[in-house]
Image (cartoon, rainbow, N blue to C red; front, side):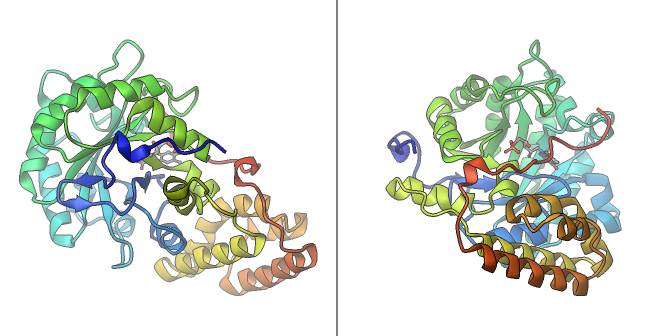
Length: 362
Ligand SMILES: Cc1cc2nc3c(=O)[nH]c(=O)nc-3n(C[C@H](O)[C@H](O)[C@H](O)COP(=O)(O)O)c2cc1C
């Protein structure tokens, strides 16, 4: 285990997005389709989070209160602080969406400038915004900042490709425009979700800004990854996406490691089973039972890779069709775990596949 270097000697001990003080420097990065209300509440129940962010939502769809979009911004008082991430290239719509979200009660607004998928970039949103250094992207961000009192942040990539590494320039301009913080995923749009995260690219963004906190993002799954991200980039905190799916206890471990150098025990099989139960029941509570089952099918394999309940149970879990069936399988897994004994598993070595990126065409 890498001993923690003096993290707060070189960065603020509390990360603040404007007036919003984050409880921890480690936040959940948005993973569309996964980091929904059910997952967020299950994770908040086992450790402190700085902030969580919704899936990206289209500003226009929000203004017409599209049913799907309203489901994406579902929240509860315990799901605080929550940022809603919006995208779009129309400044009037983006400002109106931000004002509506402020009245809805969200803690902050995040503007998406990192999404590589065609559906988002073809309308000039997501990472396409990082190609426009003539002023309209900066003007849009300024307009959103000025339309609300709550903090506005931006999540972006290093740039469109290696020839257009515009992130440091945008970071400086956005800070002048009044954003309260920035998350930077250390890949270009051309990289998608493959290849290495470039820590020196994140460092250049950190160096380009004067005051606001920068959250580094990309491929942080272990304490050693986090240590490297903090040390090599100088970022104020870390946004963790796929690492949170892999190990929902990561946030608590990071906090303990930062406080006393020891991340503590990994979760036991029984704790993981109980987390899976809470996750599934929240899905049922916030969606219909049918949609909860469909959502759960996407994630059942991760749980099975950790819990190793055997092929038969795994096949049933990935086809789950009711809460009653889930409860039967849950009881069967509990028996298997009890027979096996209560050993723990080193998280860093978990052989779990995590989604490599949104499935849509680029
Ligand atoms: C399945 C999936 C969905 C994602 N959805 C979003 C999204 O809605 N908004 C966003 O800003 N980034 C999204 N991302 C990017 C992540 O927030 C993050 O920047 C990226 O996965 C790298 O960080 P990680 O290695 O910690 O996951 C998504 C990534 C994946 C894999």
